[in-house]
Image 1: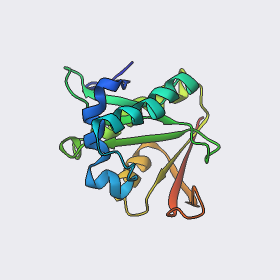
Image 2: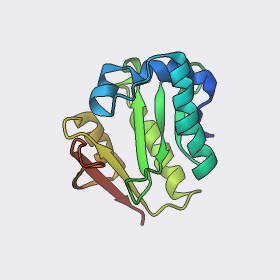
Image 3: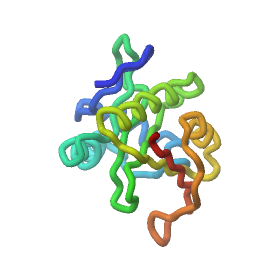
Image 4: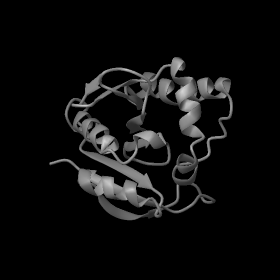
Length: 168
């Protein structure tokens, strides 16, 4: 679907359940994004069906697998999410520990941002991030997102930093 010098960004499938299980149970993913309660391959397949695969059907976009350009297993996810609690489309990403610190998240997110503002014609995107996730906040700064406010997606949820990007 999308290509960068080092990456292929394409739809997830149920065959990606082992990768998704590993990502969703990564300590940093749980700390900075959420504990989705996915602990088995069957639960990972169901998470894919109910999340990314449903989003592709309903919205024409979703979270995509980020793979090495030469092929292989996913390194992470990056894509667009239409959350019922946000009025704008949200850019999201998460990578396995071995893929962090190499600029891959920035490369993937830039490709997704270009796709959102180009073919999708989106004029505004948002991103939500925990205040303690400095790496993610820095990535958003590099992409041209600006901090807007603190928000809570639900009354009992942790406060998150809301970043916004406006198209030219």
